[in-house]
Length: 276
Ligand SMILES: C[S@@+](CC[C@H](N)C(=O)[O-])C[C@H]1O[C@@H](n2cnc3c(N)ncnc32)[C@H](O)[C@@H]1O
Image (tube, rainbow, N blue to C red; front, top):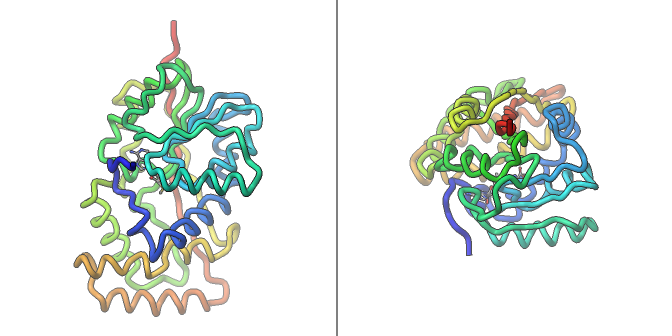
């Protein structure tokens, strides 16, 4: 059974669940060298006890398992089908020793003070109640343990050169649709405040860039696949003419020699107060 307490829905995120899983794979794998570098900088070390929150189809789980061979690794995910998918994927990569818990991150029933690091990647933008989740993560972290939240903010969506027509309108419509399901694509700007408000201290914030010079243009085009935006027209967040203009302009962007794309994401780390 899957508990629904977030705006994430693999059935509406793309033209098919397989296409959505491919999108998550490219998003997870291409940028990992930079992402792992920043995670290490924020305190993630091999041997630590780590929980991945909202682990989805397991692409980041794979990277964490390889990066942290001596760590205990637990994943909390509320979608039973994605857990199945992750287990199958990890098996195909000969990755073992991951403990999956099917539960909402709002209440996992894990004991207090269990983990050194909790990593939430692209989860917070989907949460209806990020404060409640942060309180729960605070509970399961050891004193001195850290929550690292990696997420986006559409205010810093990115730069495309040449510009893609109607992209701003599409991003806005996408944000409104996600908001109507309880999510928040402007989460980046409030992460610091949320984590501080539940009692975390020693906060730190890094902005990560992902750009086509490094990862190629393909991951960006997958994120901007028009199939992801078709439901916005059906639900009246966007008019069909705007989507058509976007599709043509996206095609011309892909054909442009030297086309460049960059987008930014936030990584905020916060520490549970140490025992005195
Ligand atoms: C956009 S996906 C990101 C998956 C993975 N973290 C990654 O970066 O590739 C968001 C994931 O969070 C999961 N999720 C959303 N709300 C959740 C909740 N309340 N409890 C546990 N998992 C949740 C979704 O099912 C989905 O797998």
